[in-house]
Each structure stands twice: as C-alpha cells, then as structure tokens.
Amino acid sequence: MTSNKQLTVAIGMIVTFLSLSVYAQPEGPKRNHFSTDGISFDYPAGYSVSDESTSEAQQFVITRKGSSVQLTLVALRRLVLPNELTTATENLTDPLVNKVALTLGRANSPERTSIKTSVGPKQADGIRLQSSGHTKRTGEVIWLRLNYRLIAMAFVRSDVDEAVESQLWQTVRSSLRVEAPITPVTIDSVPKSENPIRGGVLNGKALALPRPEYPDIARAAHASGTVVVQVLIDENGDVISAQAVSGHPLLQAAAVGAAREAKFSPTKLSGQPVKVTGVIQYNFVSW
Image 1 (cartoon, rainbow, N blue to C red):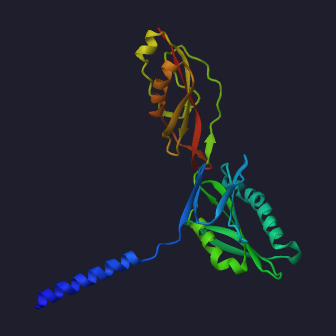
Image 2: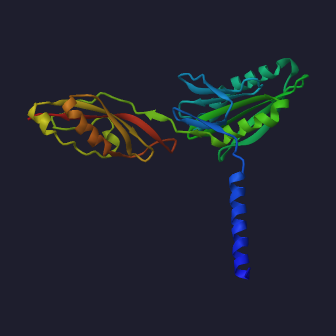
Image 3: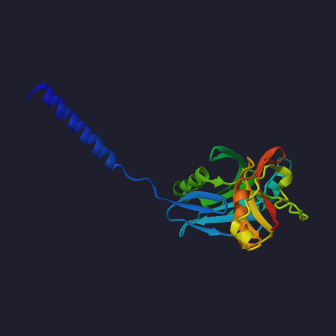
C-alpha cells in the first residue's frame, strides 16, 4: 500500500472514530419549559409546577414527589421604582423568610447567613437558613429587581438531597426570564370634535398620528361615530398591538390600521422607559 493510500485510510479511520464519538455522547438531563403572563423558566423533568398567583403577584411552587425540595418563585405584577425598592423588598421577602424558617423548624432557631447568587446575568442578594436538628435542612431566600419588577425565590431542601436538588435551583435561576410590566395610561373622557377624524386620550404624547381613510363602504352606508382603539405601546413609543373596543364595525378596521402606524414619545418613570397601554379615539363624521 502506497504512503498516500495509507494516509487516506488513516484519515478515514480518524473521521469515523470522531463521528462515532460525537454520536455516542449521552444526552443532557431533560428539561421542561414553563411560560405564562410574562414569566418563563426551565426546570428538570420529574418536577411539577403549581400556580398560586394572586392579583398582586405571580407565584409558582415547584416540587417533586418523594423529595423534600420546594422552590417558590414570587414576582410582583406592578412596576417597582428605585425609591420604593427597600420597602417593597421587605414586604415581599419577610413572609418568605418566615415561611422558610417555619419549614426548617423555629424551635431549632435556624442560623442565617447573607449570600449573593446569580439569576441569569444579574446578581441577587439573599440569606441562607440552616436547621440544626437530627435531619439537617437548608433554605435560601434571594431577591432582585428584573425589568422593573421585584422577584423573590425561596429554595428549601434536605441536605441529603443536596446533590440531586441543586440542579433544580441552578436550572431555574439560569433560565428565568421576566418581562417588564405594562403601565396603564389614565383614560380621561375626550370631547368629540367637528373634525372628521380626531385622535384622543394619548394624543398629547403623539409624535405621529396618521388619519385613517374613511372606508367607501362605510361612507355609502352613512356609518359614522367614534371608534375607540386600545393600544399597547413599547418602551420606544411604537404601537405593538391595537384592537378596536367600540365603534361602528364598518369603521373599526380603518381606525385600527391607523393606530398601528402611530408613534408616541417614550413614557418614562423615574427616568426609565416603560410599556404603557391606553386608547386612541377616532371620530368619523359622514358628510
């Protein structure tokens, strides 16, 4: 066999070996994905998520049958400004800390240690509580502000389950995503105008408010009146959704189309741009 042929065979054997090595690699732990109302995260297969949300906060509890583990995630629905962060944090975390301490056993006076840990790319403050009874248990409560929302998480487990359950804690923290809250715009009554088409309510912040075309079919039917369009405006002032909530059916499509092309100046709270929702009113007058 010539040297060139030997080299070709050797390369082929190496490529085949590498290919087999790639396909022989074991798959990583399977994950489930949870997503609802602006919050999403991954968690290992075998666990279950229960939704215990209220009108004030979203709350999710992750458990596994036959295990001591319990992970609780709480997120305030509203926007939390920097000047109220301290008070809001105390109000959110104190009940969680007390619950964890009770789970560990108040009679054993759980030891508390300040900690810092990562949640996605951000750093969270927290405390670690440990019981000193016959069965040692550990609890951690952490908190941080994500996209203007205050988030707190509590993780409780038995020390004997530490090696297994730490994967849950790491997976949820690394994959957690939280969308910014939507701030409602105050909706005031807007007097009708004699102008054929007039925007309302949000017009004070409008940078561009296109006039909708009067549909021929609506004009032929002598359809007129006010169409109210609910809009969602992002942090840049762009309309990202629009839906007619009242008005003549023959006029609604034209109003919604115009509303989607509107542009507003960004709404800021404490210097930070936020999403807002409100209405635009269009008054169609048939001549």
